[in-house]
Length: 266
View 1 (cartoon, rainbow, N blue to C red):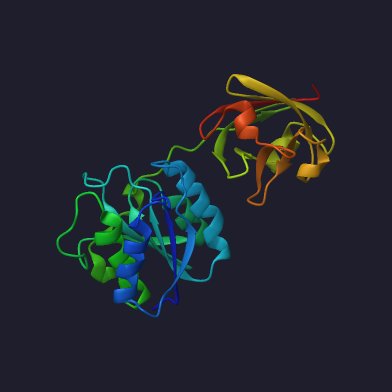
View 2 (cartoon, rainbow, N blue to C red):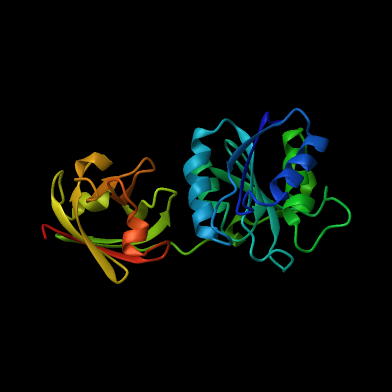
């Protein structure tokens, strides 16, 4: 089937022409396809952050080909892949970037990208030479089976799952990501928070890495005093630690992978 939309997610930044080169390849192959730029500001080489952004965004997009490139292993033996789901295709490197989004959409098959490449292929710009052409051809109606051999879904690279342990009065988890506003998204969810016994307006002590902050459990940022900390459920269903009018990431000097412990009623 053909797709009207291609979403595009990378760590390319906005200071170079890399996104434009990829979009130019798409326009040459599938001129009718419209591109949704999710972001090109994933922190460089931060696969986990790219995977989180992609997984939390694609369920709200129209059926599409989702092109994503955060690829520190470009030019190595890591596979270029296309993943078929119930609600679209995902194209990018086999390094864990695509799998959370594919699972969110209902993964059904995967293919290694061996055909429909530009010639020659740069060893350092697979986004332009391998991934963008594949995404464009899929949008134009190419069957994914023609991109290359089918591969076992079980062999796809998956990122390590963060561990969360919730016990009465204590929640141990880790930071998944930090957004533009400095809000720290945690791996834990509202279910985990409830298992700890926390309720609205409960005071908590949050230790993130080697720094800590006193916070209140709330529903929105304004539930904390100005410059105060709040622990809330974000739009993706995860717990997030935020500063009302400030940046939790800056105050706690934390980011993806930082351990986090929340003590209830401190």
